[in-house]
Image 1 (tube, one colour):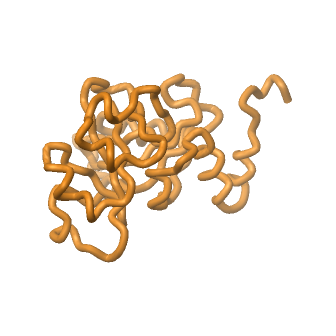
Image 2: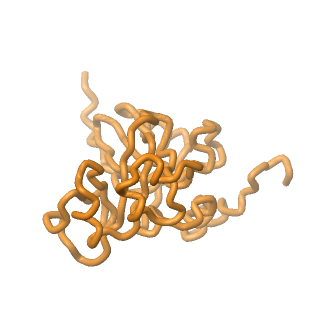
Length: 192
């Protein structure tokens, strides 16, 4: 007997780790979901910069990288692979920007095989991720039911925030009601 419930896509939305989430890979993580359907989910953690500069791994893209111009750890899966996100300002359509695929609004995936010069004039700041966060069919839905994540709207600036360490609190602060209060949750609740 198959489950006929249709998955409502959360692609383009943010998963914000709740204080109850104890997995160290996702402690205070803010994940942008790139794909979400009945086959599973894929996203990147937006607030895990590494000390590795973009020029060290993708020299040709370094000039387009936003600040901080480092590679971010996108998640615990496939750490030896890279993907990049960039915001395309303005009202371009997907067909107008070769080498870029819209995820949500102005946020899209960049084809790192494309020549950077092709995209340079179109892209806002670029962010490069090593690895990604992935969930099998129904796994993310189970985590949501368990209260591991808050699901909130993304904003284009979330992808290129200059101070990623503050992103978790900033995203929560802009929410309404009780969720905004979670931003004040101490890093170490035992110190409360």
